Image (cartoon, rainbow, N blue to C red; front, side, top):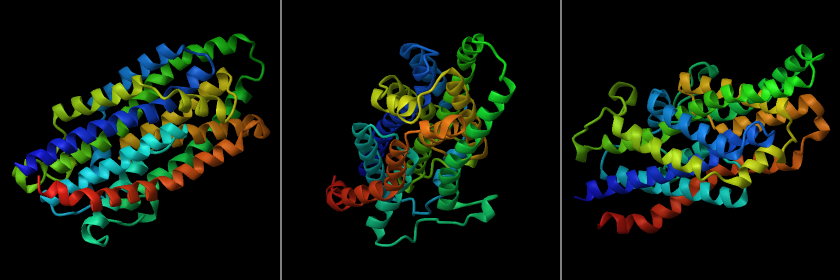
Length: 350
């Protein structure tokens, strides 16, 4: 009975995490078209929500497999307690960054929460699979997650910089009608970006839920390696619905920070940001690299601003974001550690 209750709590917290992920990263996804007035806020939210849900349903399972491979914790009831505390730490950090109006990485928060909860449970990191970077071609374990999370913003910056330079070169003699064309093209680019984010970030929650289902109390209903066992449709639907609800409850403060706080974007900048970001995020989803859409989009905006007019970039805002990114893993980990120390004894006696 205890295992079923713990699984229910894990599922509820997973849904809540998906919801926080939706308003955290979904706000960044829709920020560019809203900021450059290519779409109204309602239109951007509807398109983003629809394709985020589609990404959750049809986005594969490679990212979920990457998340499951960062720990080899024995699949017992204690592991369910670890997952509950890990999700609590990640959710807490997502709400803190929403209040502070700072775009942060939900993936960082989840990884930090898992590491912190595992350490609280064992007193060491023996069940954390750190892996290796594999010369950045075939990284494994935590190193694969960290490589994707830290390299993707750099790729976003470079992609934004080079794409804007190319567009400016090609369209050097374009008339003012170009702005209208670029605004319309964002109706094609935003769905790709939203689908990529939905496919990538929803799988992180799915990975946690499937790991919970693989514990001994459920008769190992699923293989721990998600790539072999697959993700049940009911998990995809549940996570997708809650992530979509988070997108609808968009954090306006994050939209303003990303859309106008880093660099004041015009239609060309909004188009380039969405296009370059979607390439990086979709690549991560297809290769199993868990990337942060918020980080990729924010760094792409920086690259676009640097290419157009470097003095126009609000570097102090960018600095605040960078600080938040680097604080996320230790902060979420410490929160999960405290949650385990305080509540684990009570959870065990349920």
